[in-house]
Amino acid sequence: MFDVIRQSWALLLGMLLLMVGNGLQGSLLGVRGAEAGFGAGTMSIIMSAYFAGFLVASRMVPGMIRRVGHVRVFAALGSFVSAALILFPAFQDPIAWTFGRMVIGFCFCGVYVTAESWLNNASTNETRGQTLSAYMIVQMAGVIASQGLLVVPDASGFLLFVIPSVLVSISFAPILLSITPTPAFESTKPMTLKELYDVSPLGMVGMFLLGGIFSAQFGMAAVYGTQAGLTLGQISIFVATFYVGAMVMQYPLGWLSDRTDRRKLIMLVAAFGGAASVYAVLSGGGFYAITAAAFVIGGCSNPLYSLLIAYTTDFLEPEDMASASGGLLFINGLGAITGPLVIGYVMEVVGPYGFFVLLAVLLGTMALYALFRMTRRAALPVADTGSYAPITPSATPVFMEAAQEYAIEAAEEAEAEEEEAGASN
Image (cartoon, rainbow, N blue to C red; front, top):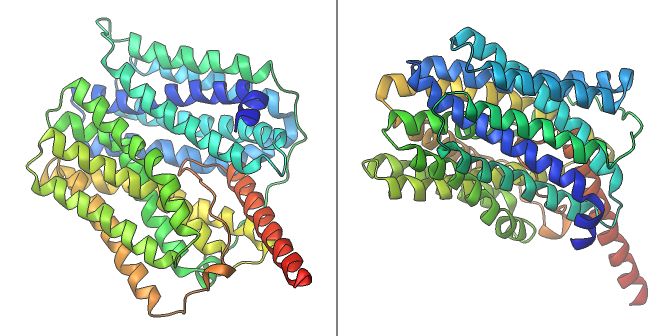
């Protein structure tokens, strides 16, 4: 791990600054939207626009990189992010904010694709797994750290928008000054939804539900906190706790994933997250209770992303993994667009705790569907399953394919070791 940090520290530092900027703007808009009089339904549209832009960019950016190169795409999209962040306080209008969120979602996806392609190119077969882990930790740490900036005094109303703009701008320096442009990659055509469903119904349905769960956490947690009457300090802790839980639970659940039936683990993890959501509703809204629930929900929902990908790829040949990853990313994006819209409507109907109500419904549905699928197909022997690779729900096609490369390499190494053991016997 230390070798990976030494070789890629500039890229990782740049990504850390990017994640601090992105994490702050998401929570900040949730708080400022309430101050501007935007209801939960209006904020849900604004927040879902980010994921719409992200999904569109995941299809368009590879072509942009092939045409003009990594450096130009990275610099251009990063400049648009900085500009959009500055303009938010100047135009406190729902339509302007929706357009701005879509632009930011598009640009951040493009920036991630470009940076991740450099990071993947800098890793070797031996270091790819550690590189993926370091990148995931940096992403989570950036979002967690960003929530601490939410409490910085901002008498003018502009400072907290200037900070992420400056952080995004600064992040370009270590990245652009430390790398050389890599060849434009060829994007893989994703599987059709029917093909993906035939391979793994649980993978497809679970990824759609998980898209809604993650986007609700990332986009609507601060909106919930504002409507529930939490202070700024409490909102920052509440939002950060989702990601602390994700960091803590990613590796223990990954360890279990490689040693048990993944469908049972998916069912139990989803059920546990759903139970935590129900607890938050029944607790009466006490700060410590909802923060504890946030830790459990984040610790369950984020690893579920990696679990569902690992489970789906267990039924694929290595040459089909990249196209399946593209399909899973697309269906997850559709769920991410839908999640804030639905949760905003529920919050308008039942109040702030509609946030936890919908999370409970989505996680509970996933658990029940996993249980149903266990009756439809026999479990694969644990020895025949692939390796678990930690992947964040904000992953781009580049990161997804890098994770698949790691899984294929791990499978090939395990097969080679078995052959050697058989030959020696």
